[in-house]
Image (cartoon, rainbow, N blue to C red; front, side, top):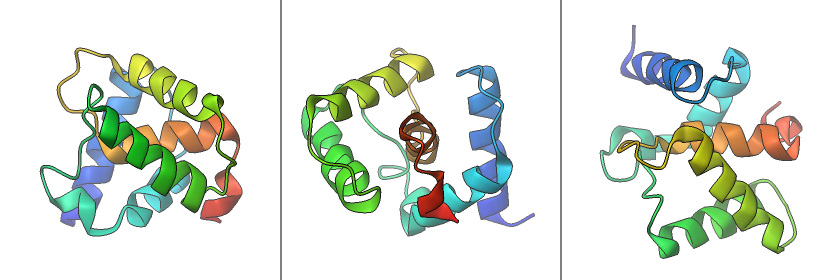
Length: 113
């Protein structure tokens, strides 16, 4: 297996065990690929759930730019809900897992077709 395949398997395991979500593996793979080289860097592969500036970046660069959602308070509420689902005490909140949950939350799977 490639390093990316190993990471996708890890993300799927997190979705199943920590988030109690059965992942759509095809979508999870596409979301992971969409993260680009960020998944291979320890710092950028995870999201700090308490860092407000990082959450703003997720909102602006992912939800608004990538998914095309208009700015509204619901965006931060969805990010907060994804972090809560993952577990606030969970040290490694993988970017691809959070993004996957946000894509599903907003029904934006078509962006990754």
